[in-house]
Image 1: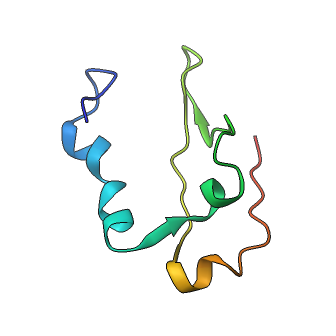
Image 2: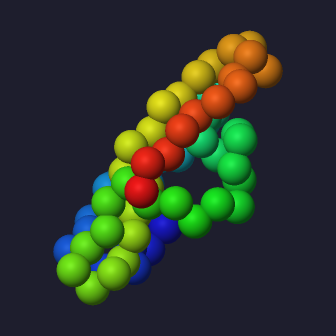
Length: 70
């Protein structure tokens, strides 16, 4: 993955793929795969979802809620 902004390094953008490759699922994306919610917004208005809660595949079917506060 190529970072969108020069301030980010390739390893920072690739980091989320490690837990997914190990079988962990992002709880928020399980419930809202297309949502445009952000946990951080910069001065230029660029938003990023920086906070992730992950669960193993067996636990993923028990996820009922994952509130996001913006």
